Amino acid sequence: MDAPDNTNAVAPGMQTQDNGTANQPHVPPTLMTIPAEIRTKVCAYLLRNPGLKWDDPVWLDNFQHGLYPQILRTCRQIYQESSSILNDGQRPFLISCPTVGSRKLSIEYPSPLTRNSTVTLPADPYEDYKVLRSCRNFSGVKNWVVRAPGSASGFLSICRALCHLKLNTLTVLQICLICAADLDGVLVTTAMEDDLQRFAPLKLLRDVRRLVFRCMDCGETEDIINEEAEAELKRIIEYDTPVDHVFEMYDKLLCYAQAFERHPRFRNDMASIPCRRPAVITFGSRRPNVPSTTLNPYQFECFHPVESNLHLAKEASNGNEISTFKNYRKEVLQFLEPQYQRIIAASKNLHAFIKREKTGAGVLDAHPPDHAIYDPRHDGIRVEGTLLVEDFASSFTRDVTPEIRLVMRKYRWIMENITANMDREVSLKRLNVALDMEDTDNWERYFKEVAGAL
Image (cartoon, rainbow, N blue to C red):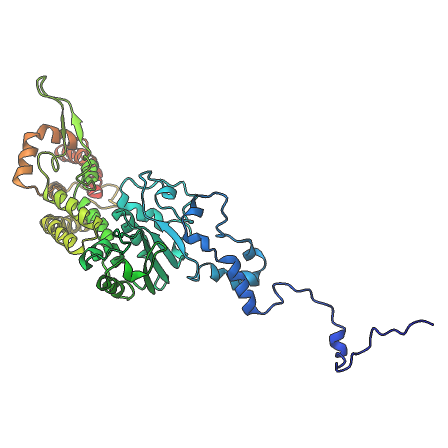
């Protein structure tokens, strides 16, 4: 006799399952079947990489940084739930200040975000922030660990790159220092003024939720920085108070000053700093016993006030000295103001002349009649237009000090060679020839060329 089938028997104390539940197919356990809270914890464990805050993995090519994890490609729901974990502020990213003069982004600023970069940094180290800011995913990081801000320009560049992040982007900013200690192993505490000067670039930042100073694996803030200095920096950085980005103010000041210089070489020299030799223009001697001469009249035997104050403003900008920069900026603007007013006045006169003569029967009429009758009054009008355009052109001649004027007169033959072949001068000469020859068509042509080039 066959044994009874007890597969459907119910053990004592247990109730029979609902028929609908019993008939459901078995669902294998997957990431999508577990509760959302547990799924988030699993994704956080997989996505947050603690190695990103240390420098050793930055130099290892085989180290997986997890910046582009495969789990995000699982499905749309996983991507939507987990993508925010990558930049939720819980995963710190290391970036070190420059210690090597290679001028390569990946070497000068070691970080998981820069380790594979082949970008060459600008010649001026104070311009590094532009490259850092353009680094992929740089603006998405919310937790930075800045390693050893010993390089003044490097630490300043990092702060400049961070200062334009969206509000509340930076959750935590950790400043990790190489701690100084005496022979007994007690950390040395510096004065408040020294600490504020040391970390002055941090004053460019706002809306940082938490600023932390740490010794590398040694201790907390109060051990390595003066408490008053820490409180002062936190008061500035963790609140939304106005801030002057002096490095951007310098760029705008330089562009404004360069607008008053017509020659491209002299204009580029304005951007040079004292430690660099400005670009020069060389011409042969007029006589055998006179050597060849190199000349930028504004930086040759003495510096022009605009160039001099621009150089000083650049140094103040590099040092993030806002009040000092504003003083030099004031000097530049005050020197350029009279020339600016002359340009405005001359341009208004020229604009009024053009507007008047573009109407019917004017010398600049865009649609003159096919058989225009000679009008002797037009001769005087063309002379007036020539004088106005010459006045407008001369308004772009820079004001100089007596010392610069002596240099320009001493080397007038060089200055004439420098400017003789510039487009404006050539068109002005042709304009005057057309006026003298009563060549109305060419006069109108060269008048438009000169007016359009100014």
